[in-house]
Length: 78
Image (cartoon, rainbow, N blue to C red):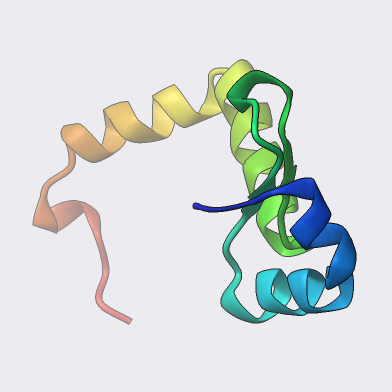
């Protein structure tokens, strides 16, 4: 993840946003790992939140367990 100092990010904030959006990669702004800010595309944020939701409700664990025990006969070719 690219890391920018706040002064650099502030000077060219429009390009920071454009770069994050175009590359679909988060960018860290700040010098302190614990107190930095992460800017990320909204689509990536939504995906992360959905994954967390599925994990919290046990759905993700169930899917992983089923995948581990699946065989080729469990799927139809489309």
